[in-house]
Amino acid sequence: MLEKTTIEVPEPAVDEVLLKVGAAGMCHSDLHVLDNELPLPLEFVMGHEIAGTVVKLGQGVDKDAFPVGKLFAVHGPNGCGSCANCRKGVDNQCQEENHLWYGLGRDGGYQEYVTVRMHSLVPVPDGLSAAVAAVTTDAVLTPYHAIKKARVNSFSRVLVIGLGGLGLNGVQILKALGAHVTCVDLREETLRKAREYGADSAVTSLGDAPLNVDVAVDFVGSNKTFALSIKHVKPAGIVIPVGLADATLQFDQHSLCLSEVSIISAFWGTSSELMECLELVAKGKVDPQFETAPLSDLPVRLKLLKEGKIKSRLALLPS
Image (cartoon, rainbow, N blue to C red; front, side):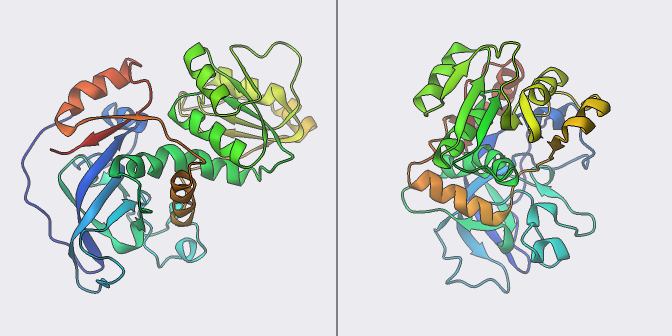
């Protein structure tokens, strides 16, 4: 249940930084939280796409590395920095006991101030706004991580299913890598945008003949789109379901075995990848589409998101 309340400005603990939230992105995952589809604590502040400026440092934080007033993006997976996975660079899979993500169990950005571990802070390149940085922490990072896991390069032929916020950013990332990109979506408006971003083909349906692509990235994640991915990927190709439309996906194990198609899962992204994403945005290679609204509009905007009336990503700005 969503509740508006007044809370004290938190104090940063050891190795933490207090941020003044500049922007917090809204995501479909918020709807999964409100529908109790994720096993999370009963009470916390939502908002897992965060960017803000440094206000105060906790004990043990280097003031030169985290200067007051500097804008940082928050790496939502909240790696501890000490476990085996964090040390290997896969801090999106932190193994810390009772681990919680920002805005998804641990207090996030739908408030004016938030405390964040210094391990989870990534400096924002000069010239980028808090709103751009906030949406980059998920809407760019998530497709970037998935595409990197598929080892896409300039020789790759890739199918993108679904052109919401993630899908359109995915198209830009793929074209920055030099891949040949085919997109499918039911909305002509988003197909036009994909063509502007350099998509080689953008259509409302794929036809009966398999495309035999190297990689299929499914930003919808329904059983229907998952089946499309498997149909159109070539033998020994890769399918990555990124969207979460259906909680359970099904496939024919016999045909999958014969074709040796790999199904790869992907979750969010690492802090080093977030750094790379912010650089891509700063260089103009990825232009995340978003709109802004005041944080006070949160309930109304969540309703619009559920009704499918938010055209791009939304960044909420505290007053």
